Length: 267
Image (cartoon, rainbow, N blue to C red):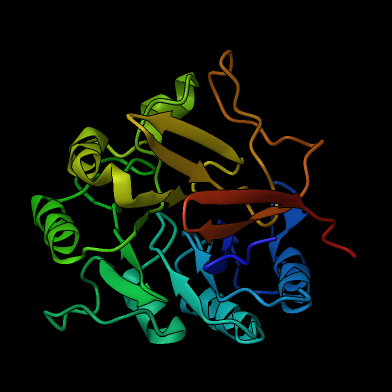
């Protein structure tokens, strides 16, 4: 079998609290993250890196980031972060080493680009106080930055963000959790879809995929608890039949494979 050009783990929505005992919806988040790190570190063929697409912390507290930093330091692979609606970019930078903004403002949106093995990655921070949480919105300056990165890169491109871009046929989700101007981002990506590997995101606490105009948008499940959002649900509920989850993504010259995995937090 042909070896992949690149392999990464996609994790999201860890919601680490201020103490190891913190639980959300009755599910402790830290033990699940610790178990996930053990799984990733134990891969027989190590991943090239890990992508965390947001909500590292649950409550935006320094204590939660300090605990997350100590825990995630156990990863043997490099990790890159996206800012989620439960996160603060200044604390992602202070505690987890997320890249500084060119302006020097630690609270500036966490937008940056990086390259691994000739693959270009664009990280966008759609957390915006101009829209009600948990909705997102990209500023005009961020769309301009995205266009700049797209224009400056000639090789394969991947986009990373926290929020979904399109309606997902769920009344509550579509009303409250999308990027308000997601169509504007999509419009920037359509002209380069032939070299676009895909868009990877979190926020939904559910594994799902959307394909539009030949572009794949892939959400990984939360590392500790999943929502049971369905077309007839007016409010999200926790899916008690689900388990913690993560994805592994492999890039080949002519295809992308996404493996979706579940695991038991206790072993």
